Length: 427
Ligand code: ATP
Image (cartoon, rainbow, N blue to C red; front, side, top):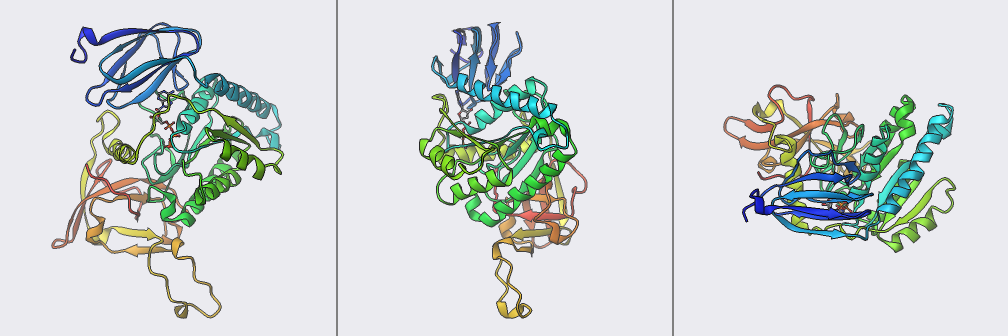
């Protein structure tokens, strides 16, 4: 039956503590509503009688604590009911965090105890880290907290486009369809979809982000008590593992949730044993997590960038702007040729190649690259500054020396300096 026709409409009855796992078909959206009972999607309650429309390819689960009847309308790639989920263990984690938030709130605001839980979620790729982060945030928001979400996954972030690390306060349970609102996140641009392209830069940015949040927490008792949930990358071997330790340390994480890997859990437990205030907790991976291959990930990255410019429901109209080559001040971090030692003053150490900020003149390679607009006032602030947004280079004309780019809006850019990495996009 064609989607949308009455034959495609069906009801699913869910018993308590069961979930309906859905992968929307590739061509048409799926409509869903709650008929009876209560149910949630990754921690956010589904409103009664309101139809939710999920885009093609969307993967999600509807979970019920007490039983529910769901109606779905449209074609799915797969949909099945599961009665074995790790949800009880996840909600138990939430309960522990909740108690710690309450304790933090009740403590004198200048004491260390006023800091709520700092949770970091780690695990291999496709273990459900983003999903667990989302549930913990939505459950906390439902209870009136405004926890800070930190996303360190530059490959598949859920706050902004790929190639970035970012943080944002979560004030309401996360919308099951639209995800995290792109309000005013704090974003740092790495410019690559894996940290291995520039590990030093990744660490610097993680540190900057942590420092800014630390300052914000000092002045805001409410968000301090709510704490944070930090999502990480699925790269957990070698340098990836080092970067996890770096993040745990830099953010002063107090709870490390390890999803789906015994070995990682035991390694982290051993190295963190000496830290009395850090709990390392092993959690089961949900059988519902869908594995994504490189091609699917690549595609997901593209749609995140598209969403930035055009909106999640194609509801934004980006603007095509033209500028003279000389108007755009483009910089690259790392990758430039290293100055010869002989060019430095006697005794001076060359700064690491990887952290050098160098101007880039307009060249053909910029075509189809996504550039970040920095808040830096001077070039030497570029590395430590967060970014205001992004532009996408659509045309370079060497005759007229003009560059055409797509930006979320018309008019002048919110910053003078642009940062380039190797983040590309093709519409
Ligand atoms: P990454 O490898 O990018 O770090 P991850 O560990 O963060 O991935 P998620 O993004 O949480 O994994 O999950 C992968 C996919 O599986 C997502 O599309 C998510 O919506 C889906 N998913 C997670 N849990 C369930 C579930 N219980 N039922 C159905 N789909 C699910």
